Image (tube, rainbow, N blue to C red):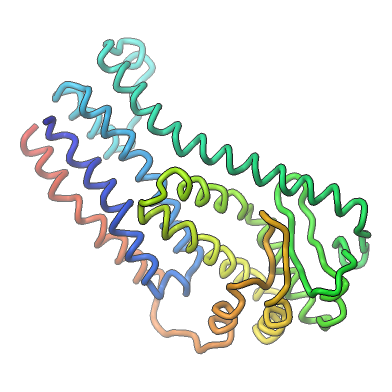
Length: 302
């Protein structure tokens, strides 16, 4: 077997198996949810690249596969002239890599289209039964159940039920709206689609299985942190409590929902001392160091 397959194999194991188990147990990921999301995105991207390199390394001869490792480590893409001068074996390796990348890519597009269709149908329904409130800048839906949610994407809007208007005070309503607008502004539906694509394509993989339920929670926490720039923690926690039993359509972000209790404890609980960003970066660096022996072995035997 071509020994140059070891670095991408090690990278796939670290990002697909090791780091997800570390992330789901890491306190720092919930303290700094945007950093946690960045690490999840990095894991997904590196896993896709590593798995795409595996068949390419098996097809390529040793001297060419070593150059592929060098390009990956130095982030230096091949020149146009080099691509035009590719041998049939190298072209086959490139096709194999692209075929592997097409699997999660197709799943991502499918998730986006499925979510867009669901949001479009709901937006059409809202145009019939909802009314636009210019003062709040939201669509008001007549429903006794308290709910505040948003539809991201092209049909972006924030929806508030009449039940929510009845139970939320002015401060609590402003906090809930700030939370939903954070989802829209951050384009969080793209990350949800990516996590859903991985969960459908790599069902048994810890990266997909754990990420499918962890990424949405971190997105809610990131939206909470963004909302806290404009409102108090008491107002946001009170809004979450009032909306905890609320309902939202499929593929929409809701201010309440099943994660409300966890997020309330996080918002109202004591802030942990220390530097979560530094702890997170140290944990990622420690996990990444697991593939250094494989890279050294690859270079030593080249």
